[in-house]
Amino acid sequence: MAKKVKKRGEIKRKLLHKYRLVILNENTFEEKISFKLSRLNVFVSGSLCIIGLIGLTTLLIAFTPLREYIPGYSSTKLKAQATELTYKTDSLVRTLYYTNKYLNNVRMVLRGDLENDEINRDSLFKQFKLDPSTVDLSPIKEDSLLRAEVALEDKYNLFESSSGSTSIVFFPPVSGTLSQAYDTQKKHYAVDIVAPRETPVKAVADGTVIFAEWTADTGHVIILEHKDGLLSVYKHNGSLNKSQGDVVTSGEVIASVGNTGEYTTGPHLHFELWNNGAPVNPMDYIDFK
Image 1: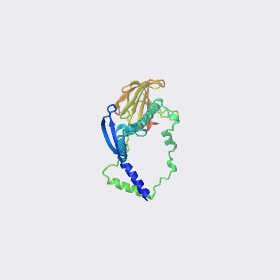
Image 2 (image 1 turned 45 degrees about the vertical axis):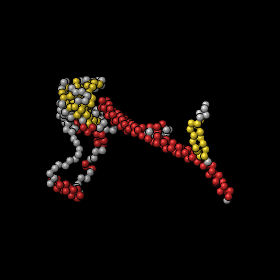
Image 3 (image 1 turned 30 degrees about the vertical axis):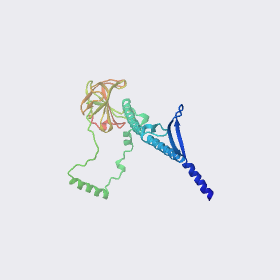
Image 4 (image 1 turned 120 degrees about the horizontal axis):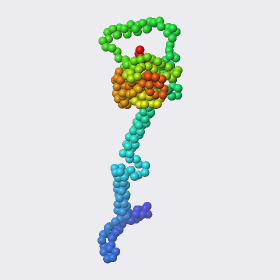
């Protein structure tokens, strides 16, 4: 027990023993500065300095741009820029996709053909059209009750019901004789209308000119874009009265009948209607008589 007490006293004496640190002039040995220190003071002072350096380093890393030089530490500004660039890239890719799809539709319209033998909508309608003679059309009790209920509601309804669908009233593009009809078997996705040269060709509906150029196969071609994804195409024109980007109204003169292009057989208008990238029969929408 006495040894332990003696040992503790010796340790305490060593920690608290005073030492003098003197800074002298090397040439004159003149005392400049002196410090009285103990081992305990040195230990405490050193620990406080180390803790202070650690705290200062942490503050510099957390609140100054120096943190960007530490490997693996990403900048908040760089993160925001990367996120913004990611959104812009995604938007550009999506825009490029729809642009390529749009240009591909225009390319198919100019060629007058479908890629990869795409199924025509009109042929599907004809193929799956039901024969009324094979369907039982006799009214049932539920149907009669529903009809009576709807009739009663319509009788006292002061406002017309809105279906939400839009429709376009088409204007005949030119007056003349129909020489060739729409025929999917022969890949003739248009109607040919014979008319004298210089006969005005009119827009079938309000729209915007998206193509107005010369092509070797079909001569002067003009394409209008209408609402609901509809395109109207006018080929073999003698001249064009509108340019790309022009806005036209229904019945406005956009070209004149001609005999231009390699595939023409005489003065006529080759007219096509395309709905969302697929050709449709113009005679289902326009009365050419």
